[in-house]
Image 1 (spheres, rainbow, N blue to C red):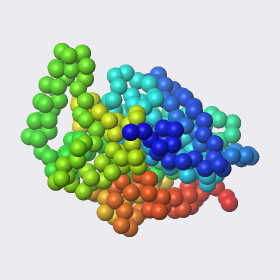
Image 2 (image 1 turned 120 degrees about the vertical axis):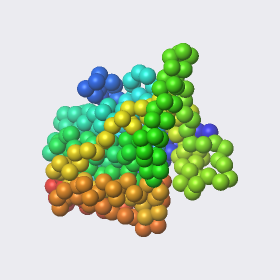
Image 3 (image 1 turned 90 degrees about the vertical axis):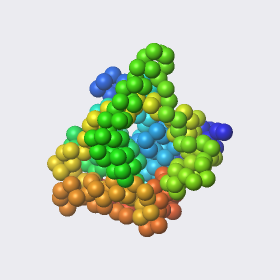
Image 4 (image 1 turned 90 degrees about the horizontal axis):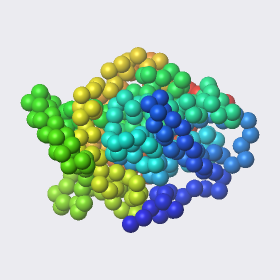
Amino acid sequence: MKAKYDGYTFQIRESVTRSKVSFTNRYGIKLVGDLYLPKGFTGKLPAIAVSGPFGAVKEQCSGLYAEEMASRGFAALAFDPSFIGESGGEARNVASPDINTEDFSAAVDFLINQDFIDPEKIGIIGICGFGGFAVSAAIADPRIKATFAMTMYDMTRVSAKGYFDSADSAEERNKLRKSLSGQRTLDYRHGVPARAGGVVDPLPEDAPDFVKDYYAYYKTDRGYAERSLNSNAGWNVTSSISLMNDKLLSYADEIENAVILIHGEKAHSRYMSEGVFPLLKGKNKHLIIVPRASHTDLYDQKDKIPFNQIEELLDKYLGIEK
């Protein structure tokens, strides 16, 4: 199976250009992205950096979002985070609450130093697990004037507590710690880290609806991409070690700039945004629930993704006059 449009899961319109770029984060990891620009623009552009979902690559959802925002007059950078896709970092197929937060700030470093971008008008969009990392970046980096977390997962919460907080006990966490530490021993012995597998395939008949939704995106022509972890062999089994040992959004109440959480009404993960939102302080914080939308609807269903609202809020918080 191949992605439909030269390796991408979406088409690029004639009014938008796409070019490959690279930049380095403060850990020395080279990140690779696609920069989408409105064709024939003049003057300095407001800019958006986009990444996610967790286990996806820039040829999937983040690129779709970036292409859409470029068509609306933004410079939009969709990038692969450290350790996956075309980006660098060894070992491969691992996640880090620190480094993946840093990846957003590294994208801002790149954007803020382009002479065609207004350095005071930069925002970020994180999707799914990278929604959590985006909010974490907003805590750490006040250069980010507006942060959008779409269909957000806090990966540290779900790693430490399980889906719907169903394994939230010291007993359950210690059981998982023993399993993961044992896997480290085996990975060292074998010289190759075991992979967790991407989205389950074949799909069991009794799979929960949200697993069916993941399958319908990652494992079909709709969203399959060759470098996507979720479409293929998945993360390293031990990738969750650092995630379950961290509390990603501990200082969310100290974010001064705008944060907008957008979630589907029917999303299994909706409790994540609803849990974070009360922590956010100030009149520039918003929780938007999209009627009748599931978790994965906000990956690529343009009739449900509230792009008009996203643009309006970006204009407001980046100070864009139209």
